[in-house]
Length: 432
Image 1 (cartoon, rainbow, N blue to C red):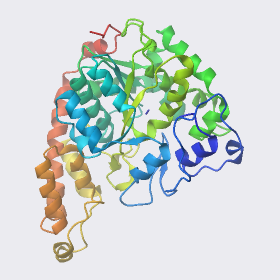
Image 2 (cartoon, helix red, strand yellow; image 1 turned 180 degrees about the vertical axis):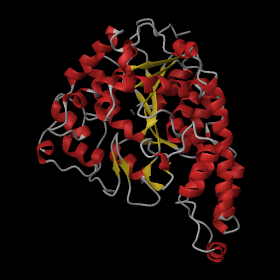
Image 3 (cartoon, rainbow, N blue to C red; image 1 turned 90 degrees about the vertical axis):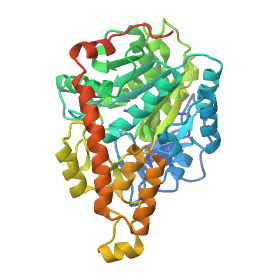
Image 4 (cartoon, rainbow, N blue to C red; image 1 turned 30 degrees about the vertical axis):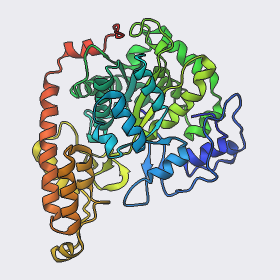
């Protein structure tokens, strides 16, 4: 998939980092409110983040503290983590504890609703451009499952097959087929079948007038200059791209799902997503009050790095940068051994003396995502950093972990029949 309300000049500098189109800069955004105070300047020009591309010139990857400042979101700190544990009565997920989900908008509001026993719903999504999900795609779904289980909240998952048709060299039929295949991978993550609705845009929008009505309301509330400033669209981009942000915004509003929520238009929404999707929802948050809706809350994740290093995120278009949920044990071993960027030294002697660099080592970075045992992760970090643990042993640790996780995912995937898929993709009441 996965912001308006600011002077376009700042949006260009902060959200796109490198764009300097004077035609966009000269325009001011009308009929909007300033949601967040912009910083004085957009430092960190070496990082480029938009909904389609993520790159950094640093081997350690994106500077997330600077990104928080540029985007105007709030850091998830120890105080907020303590409140989550107090409100839920459960330990926070290790994604939160380790700063993998590091930023938010209005999460305190969602916690207050839960304390007051008032309902809210979850919304996340997937742009189906490949036959199967890769590890990076799993991250928001793992977090969303924890949120669903912890808060007992209904969930909508948008499959933006329309977006992939507009951006990729895919037919409508192929994009829609990939959406249904990806839905099976998503179901295999273990979501509650009674509280999860998965929908393809190409299937659902024509079936639900209320969804289309919200799209129209959003489209009329955002100008072309605003969209150019947020997303960097140019004069040669076709109109489908310009119109699409309203499609991704519409699921933020409960009235887009009348069957699920009994026609209620007042249910708040929490959206777990990678932070590159934030521009869509900054736009949504600005439009919401003018439509009489509540602003969606956001929970942002960091990017899952490519095997070749943290300078870019894992991509489904490059099989050598990615580990897919369909990969065999042998493929996982080969990819990690051959392609995973190492923080080790040039020789064993130098490594023993200086130790490995965990800040750039991809095998260690992947362990921070998927090795849940804090004590084991700390021992791996300490032993690798001291030089006691060599790169080969670190890769072996990761290989064995991922082989086990992917084997379990593949077994669950086998149980997702067409009937199971149909259940998840059929609108039905979800409020208790």
